[in-house]
Length: 58
Image 1 (cartoon, rainbow, N blue to C red):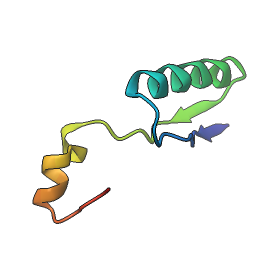
Image 2: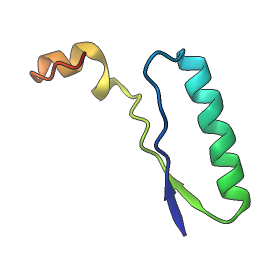
Image 3: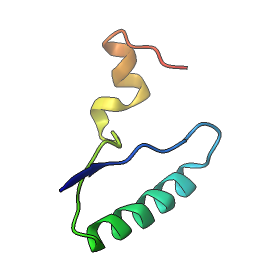
Image 4: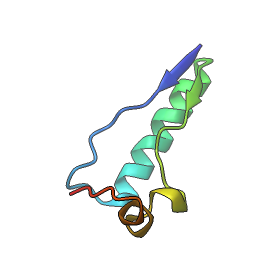
């Protein structure tokens, strides 16, 4: 079984987002799910790299 997390992030501090996500992943893995990583945090998704590719996100 696989699971993908979707969580509200607008207006939340990064630390809270990560903590909530880690709790959810732990709970799902304990139930036998493989969690698919959809939190894009590597350099490819940095604001500067996105702008270089013409992507502007508010």
